[in-house]
Image 1 (cartoon, rainbow, N blue to C red):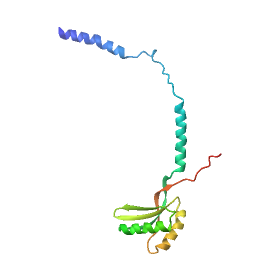
Image 2: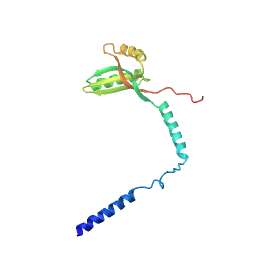
Image 3: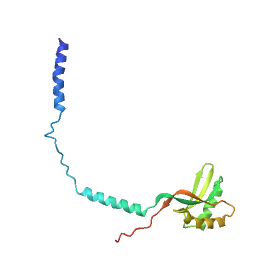
Image 4: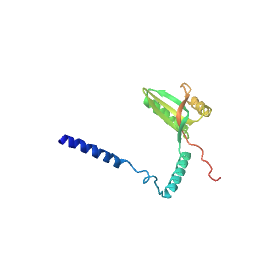
Length: 149
């Protein structure tokens, strides 16, 4: 008897619960969003800041560097880097470790032609070493644009 009452009550209660979960489309047909106009101003300011930072800061692009040394001796690599820094203070030099070698690279050039002139000067300093122009990811700072237009 109890089982029959439980089954009957389940059949009566389940449709009521399901009916209450179905939404009435007439009462929930639209949503009104009130947006503060300051959000648009903030978004425009942030977009301008992003444009300026892209123009002024260095970017990482594909380019070329000059590899001046490739040795297993760290002291030798540091000596080459120090000498390159003293002779070419306008060029940035890099000491890379790729096991088991230390590599000294200098410069940030977009084309091989740009790197060729510095390569000739470095080859005069180290005539017995192989000085190579190698492809690398470089730091490139674009020239500033005129905003006065």
